[in-house]
Image (cartoon, rainbow over all chains, first blue to last red; front, side, top):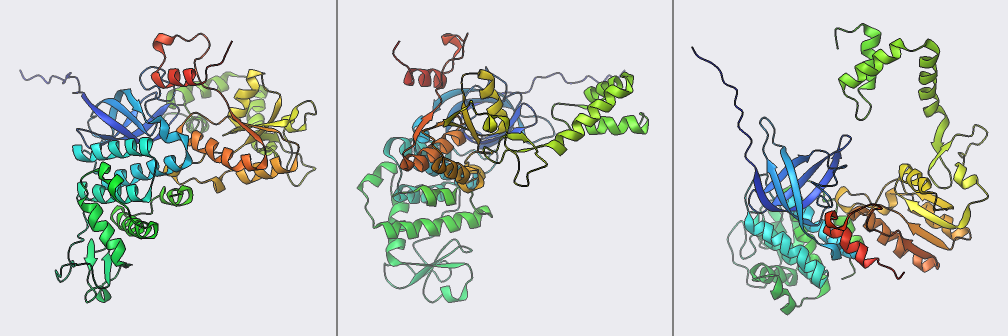
Length: 263
Length: 206
């Protein structure tokens, strides 16, 4: 006789270091939390009773927290079940100035926008962790933000082509009037740019800075770099527009970055 | 729900909209009301109706107040009207329920200002969306000497506190932040690292 036996297997739990990207209330006592994990990419899950829990989630679901996340998947939904979170480190210096809060929020929003759910990317996780660490220890600057944007675009698969024209392949050698094409994801030469839409004019100096920063080895190399503030701002604004184009919406934290930046 | 008679089903459906109330609890409450005396149920319905008709926002502190039909510019809450309150102190909170929580402590005798939210870069909520402009006007016009920032110890709460400090200090106002640390009856062994760290940061001489 055939008998149907209901499966009683326990769901398989995963444990991974993760950074809390954002969280919001869900119902009376639950929270939905979005993490960037080291080994499972972006994970969004429900933390049951998180608003009341004094044990499982205490102080570990705030943005700017590096945690050890325990979760398992639930059948029929992409929303994971968050079993618990242990705080590894809270980047507390980030909350000591509006400028740091604005910069860290921007880093987290662009990382969130350019990373995919369950798309394992250890380098991306390390980049965000190092970025938050850099702001905490060294403060904020347009130079750092521009470097972070360029490396994030590279790690998430949206690296803009800055060495040659995206249309005709003509190499950039530091001369002529070039432009940045949002649609093509790279630069266009003087001959090609008039025929394309969604094109931003880009000065030679700003393009030069972007090329050098794209090749920079790491955050520490920034201490050796020096560019005029106007050049860096132009580079950052072009990259911001490109990121918004890829994400498909205006970034909420961008006006804060603008309002609370002093450098 | 289709098994219930129509008036009962309608009440259950309405009760289900309340926070924390599922269908089972809603049905239990509805059956309870069915058993109650007609005048008691009428009283409950009347209280709910009056809540929306008679409650409003205080024109001074933006906390909860009873609507004064004689005034077109809105009423003042009991705290703002009370002459015994210390008028040189204003405690800034995020929402009206936080004001109630501070009142319960019976430690604070000053006035309040309810911001109706917090600055949140990730949600795109800036200072202009809150009652900060009104706070600055209030502080500039009266004899206020201290503003106590009692926003929650979250990233958004901290951002709001930092913004207020920056906006108020040029006016010559003392700006303080409520302390953070261990709860009464708590145990060091079971306290999380962030709270314990804050408790050490805010230690005082005894």
